[in-house]
Length: 301
Image (cartoon, rainbow, N blue to C red; front, side):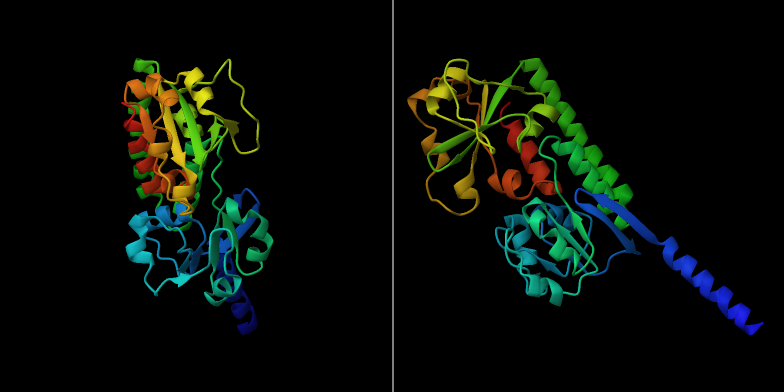
């Protein structure tokens, strides 16, 4: 009788244990977690931005190129420093003894190695559908950490602002061109890019040149100032990559202050917007980053 009773207790404990297990799919696989993760390692600035907003305390983060609004907190030695966005420190990650690692697209090729340390969730924002993808990640992580209602309120707040901008874009019939400069090299990006938010979610139509050619590349088409002048965009969004990653001192404001760019409706109507590179380039999918992106776009109006 005692043996049967012990067996029943064991079965009940096992059922209780696995009833709390959560299986989560992501772009590179599936992870199963038992209960709420307690020791979280975050290798993504976007994910860190979001987790900080919902009160999740990680044990280790990437401190390189971290957004200013997160620096004062996460520069503290209480948070283990885990290398760089492209080269995470595996030894430090292992020593942090995580029960969950949250990585991003820059670390996709390291996924298998990370998974050998702990279950790894890929916080990989789809550049073709920024807002849809971001909402998905927020909801997944919110469920893991028991913050679903808070996140629904956050999503509603952002969605309301998107709808307001859409109304302004439609009423003004605005087209836009989104470009990124790396020094003097200028690349144009359309709807299937890190700037998809502008077109897919905020209602701008893409403006291109019909007479001046561009050079197709995997990451944006290489263009010239002549191309911009011929396209005549209503709004010109500019992201300075070198300034964003701390690789240059030149000012994109100075670079784009020339006769060709100044001939466009964007310049004449004060609708050249220099984007916050940290939010758009380094912290995609973050809550504060998304708010900063919205504020940038509002400058066009």
